[in-house]
Length: 183
Ligand SMILES: [Zn+2]
Image 1 (cartoon, protein in one colour):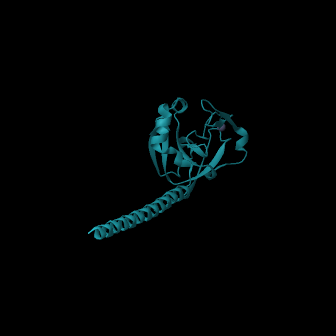
Image 2 (image 1 turned 90 degrees about the vertical axis):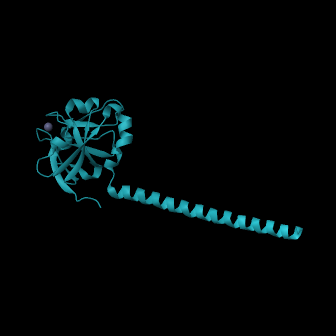
Image 3 (image 1 turned 30 degrees about the horizontal axis):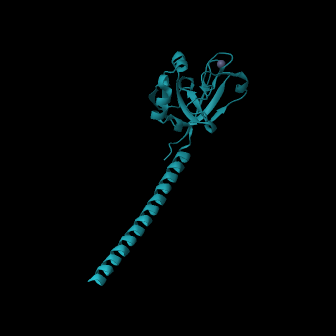
């Protein structure tokens, strides 16, 4: 069951960039130690792209910094410099919302998990962080598909076993009959 989603508001320091995001009241936030995150003390939680919406003329106040693989789009406010949200390398199809840029009052519980950005690939594989931008229904349907695939595989194997069984019985019968004839 997917937890109930509520609207969280937030934005940058000068309030030129404002947005709202649909997320549960209880979230898992990632504290990363990569070169960029450690400098700005970044702790964020990731949502599917469609759950995030920029408000008013916020877009006009944004500029983007990229580095390394240039996958992450570090969007920040041109006026005050605050990166209130960005597109993370771990979830290029999602949005990472800066925990401290949320207006207070709508989050009830935050579980902080450490992301070892210094060993990025290892962390990526071990944490399963890439699922954060996927809707639960999409994850469920992928699991459903693998269950169906397992079931088809099971049917195939049992059919094959039945055939082997029949073949063994026929072989045994032939041997038995040959022995009878010899006797
Ligand atoms: Zn600003």
